[in-house]
Length: 128
Figure 1 (cartoon, rainbow, N blue to C red):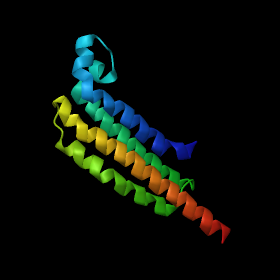
Figure 2 (cartoon, helix red, strand yellow; figure 1 turned 90 degrees about the vertical axis):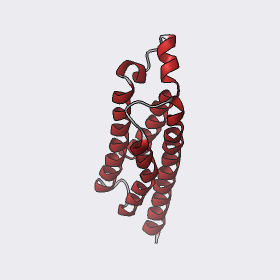
Figure 3 (cartoon, one colour; figure 1 turned 180 degrees about the vertical axis):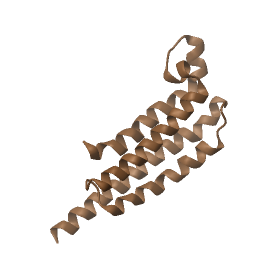
Figure 4 (cartoon, rainbow, N blue to C red; figure 1 turned 135 degrees about the vertical axis):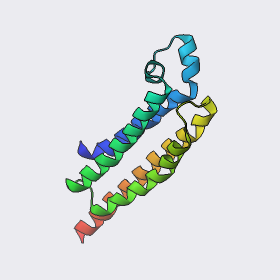
């Protein structure tokens, strides 16, 4: 279960960030997504917290022995997403969230790939 947290949180981040693309239209239509209910600034802060939780869960996985120490390399995959957050303001046009969606998706895929590779390498090392 512990091992599922980093990817699970990153996948949740993709799903959550998708709501930024159309949150104003959702508000006008009366939809109650978290971005609409919380507002753009607060929802963007929550998005950042999800990323932080994903990073912390990866570190916890290593400390608990669920992942080998070299799996921490996966933290590097988060840098492009972190940089996108830095370019966003408290209020943005919907199009400004396209890079956030792309970076969220790529971070999840790359991080997952590194974690899978780490587990494969760990399995090979243990069989030697």
